[in-house]
Length: 147
Length: 147
Image (cartoon, rainbow over all chains, first blue to last red; front, side, top):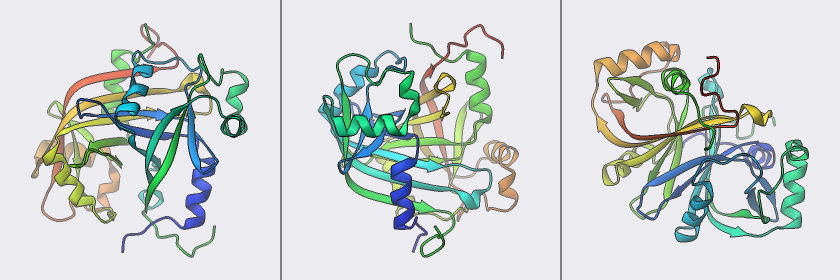
C-alpha cells in the first residue's frame, strides 16, 4: 500500500495550507494551471477573484469552469529532504458564485494580506470547489504517528 | 499590460527551480495534477520515473500522456508577502521515452538526492516535455530591473 497522509494531517492541511495549484480543462481539451489562494468553509474550498493583479485572460479562464466544472487542486510540500515530501490532490467540481459571508470571513481570517489587498476585484466573485475525491501521498508514512 | 517575469529570470527559473506541478487530462476528460522534479536539457524539460515511492496508479497516469500529450507545467513561488509572488506556466507536449544520457546528467547535476535515490524505478523511463508556449506573471514587474 502506498504511504499516505493521516486523516488528521489532511484536515490540518486543508484548513491552513496557504496555496493550491488549480488544474482545469480548456474548451479545446488542453489542461490549464494556475496557483490560487483558498479557504475552507461550509464543506467546500473557496477562492476569490481578488485584487491581486491578474494576467490577461485570468477572468476568461473562469468561463472555462462553466464549460468544464471538473477540476483538480494540488496542495503539496517540496523540500530538498525528499523524506519530507507530501502531496494531497482534491478532485472537485468548481462553481462560480457571488459573495458568501462565511467564505469571506474564512478568507479574511486565513489571509491577513486582505487588510491591504482587496478581497474582490470588481463584483464579489468566488469559486466554490466541492470535493469529489481526495488522494494523498507522503514519502514517510505518518498514519498513526504523532501529529 | 500585465506584469510578467523578465526573460533572464524565466531562463534562470527553468534551469534551477526544483519542482513543477504537472497537469494532464485523463481519457475521461478530467484534469489530473501531480508535483514532479525535472531538469532542462536539449531544449526540453525532462522528468524521470524515479525511485521515490509512488502512489498507486502513478504509472497508469503515464499512459494518460500517450492518450493526450498536451500538458501544462507550473513553476511558481508562494510567499506571505504577496508582492513577491510569481508564476510561470509552460504549455507543452509530453512524450515518454527511455534513457537519455544528456537528460540523466542534467538530473543528477541538479538533484544531489539522486546519490541516494534511484534515478529510475525500473527500466529507464523519462518524460520529455517539449515547450509550446510560455506564460508568466509577476506581482512586481521586473522587466528591466536588476537580476
